[in-house]
Amino acid sequence: MNPTLVTFIAYLVVMIAIGLITYRMTHTLSDYVLGGRKLNSWVTAFSAAASDFSGWLLIGLPGAAYAAGLGTWSLWIAVGLAIGAMINWQYVAKRLRIYTEYSNDSITLPQFFENRYRDKSHLLRVISALFILAFFLFYTASGLVAGAKLFQGTFDVSYHFSLTLGAIIIVAYTFLGGFLAVSITDFIQGALMSAALAFTAIYGLISIGGFGELFNQLGSIDPSLINAFADTAYDQPNGVFWDSAGAIGAVGIISALAWGLGYFGQPHILARFMAIRSHKEIRKARLISVSLGLVIPLYGSLIVGMLGIVTFDQPLADSEQVFIQLVQVVYNPWIAGILLAAVLAAIMSTVDSQLLVSSSALSEDFYRRYFRKQASDKELVWVGRISVLVIAIVAVLIAWNETSSVLNLVGYAWAGFGATFGPPILFSLFWRKTSRNGIVAGMLVGGLTVFIWPMTGSALYEMVPGFAFSCIAIIIFSLLGGGPSKEVVEEYDKVAGVK
Image (cartoon, rainbow, N blue to C red; front, top):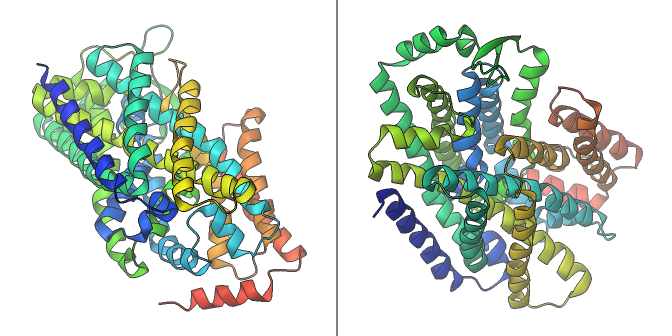
C-alpha cells in the first residue's frame, strides 16, 4: 500500500476519534463555542497559531517565496505578521479574556460588542455577525482550495473530488466535537506544522550547504531573488521564469507589512484568547505561541519556498505546489506522508475554526436572538452543528473554480476581518471614550472599504485604507455622539484595574 496514503488515513482516524470523544464532553453552547473556557496555555498557544496559519502557510506563502524569493512581498509579509502577532498576544489577549467574562460572560465577538456597550437595539450584534459570515465564506473557501490542491498534487486525483473529500473530513469532527475538538486537534496540528517546516528547512539547508550556498544559487538564477526590495516576475507568457521586474516601491512594502494589522480583528484567533481558563496563563501561552507556533513555521515557510527554486530542474506550473512536490522528491514516502499530513493539519486547523465561529454567529447571534429566545443549550448546539454544514456547502461552491488562488482568497478575507473588527476591538479595550455609535461606524466603514477599495484599481492593500478609515470613524462618531454611558465607563475602569 502507498505509505503516504497510510499516513494520511492514520492521521484522519486520530482526528475523527478526537471528534467522537469530545462529542460526549459537549453539552452547552459555551462548551461548543468556547470549550467552556477550559483551555490550558499550551493548547491555547498552539491552537491560536494553528487556526491562524492555515493552508496558506504551507501552500500560499511557500508559493510566494518560490515565485519571488525574498523579493515582491514574501519577506515583508512575514515581518508584518510576526510583529502583529506579538503585539496581539502582548496587549490584546489578556484584556479581551478579562473583558469578555466581565461583560456578561460573552462567548462570541458580536455578543461581546453588544454587552460591552449595552446595545439594546442589537445593531452591533447583527452588523458584526453579518461581516463574520461574509468574510469567513471566502476564508473557509481558501482552506478548501488548499486542501484540494494537496490531494490533487499528492494522489493525482481530480480537483473537485479533492475539494469535496476535504470538506467532508473537516466538517465531520467540527460537527461532532465543536470548539473542544477543534482546539485539541489544533494543538496536534500546530505542533505538526511547526515540526514539518522546521525539519524541511533545516534538512534542505544542510543538504545544500547552508544559507550562503542557497543565496549563491538563487543569485545565479536572478539577482532579484535575493533582493528584498526588488520585484520578480514569474512564469511569463514567453516562458521565462524568475526575471527582475524592478523595485517593489513603498506601496508594495506598506501593503505587505499591513498584514500584521489583521491580527487584531480575526475572530477565530481572538476566540482562543477568550477561551483560555485564566488570563494569568496568557503570558506563558504568548511565549509558546510566538516562539514555537509563529517564528519557526513562518520563516521556515519562506526557506522552503526558496529551496524549491534550486531543487527542481523544471519550474513548477503552479508555484503553490512547491511544498507538496518538494517533500515527495526529497524524503522517503513514509517521511513525506507525515510531512504532507502537516499540510492537511494546517488546512484543517483553520477551516474548522472558521466554521465554528461562523456557526456560532448563526446560532447565538441570529437564531437565539431573533427566532428562539428560549431555546435550550441542546437545541442551540444542534443549530450550531447544522450551521457548520450549511456554511461548508456555500464555501465549497465558492471554491469550485479550479483556478482559485489560496493566497488571494486569504488576503481578501484577512483584510476584511482586520479592517472590520481590528479597530473596534482595540478601541473597545483601550479607549475609555469609545461609544456604541463609534463602533458601529468603525465596523461599517472598515468592512465596506474592503469591499469597495479593489474597484479603485489601487495597488495599495485594502487593509491599509480600511483600517485607517475605521479608526477615524470610531474617533469622530464617539466624540460627536456624546460618549459612552456611565455604566459602560465604570465597567471599563473595573476591567482596566484587573491585574
